[in-house]
Length: 182
Image 1 (cartoon, rainbow, N blue to C red):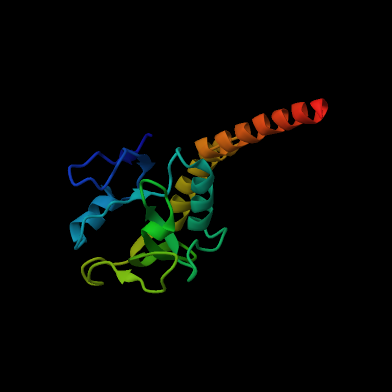
Image 2 (image 1 turned 60 degrees about the vertical axis):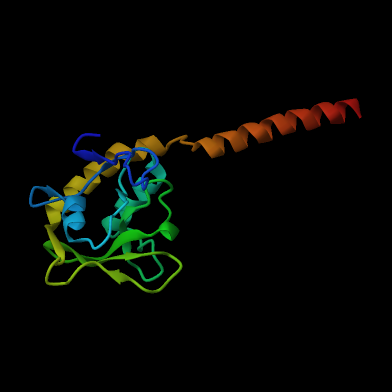
């Protein structure tokens, strides 16, 4: 994925499989690298924009653009999620997205799940400040990515969905044969 990043298989066993994703860049540096530098623990997350999960990617971009409410109960938006399943229950790096006239700001970056109200503050507020983007540039990049990814969702099936569909099809054929014999 151009401009992206890839998780790696690590000796500590946190990532089971490599995942390619588009990372956010702030002042020329990947945001996840900046977060790693300030984290008290090892961060095993991937960005929410990736081809492997096109349906979720479209939803994530729409949330980042303010077109949809946040994906967490308190309205916050996930930026990085579990590399294995993308579920918020595994924990996610989240922010409150503020869309202003000329600026988009990611405030109070923290670690949270969708089943607990608590948000673990990410570092010291003075140590890791809010992140601000020039709004027109931010929207241009995200809209371009949305236009690229949205067509990938047409007819898209995850392996479990395909298997379920094929199982139903086989079962339907079997039932029809049994009814004809019956």
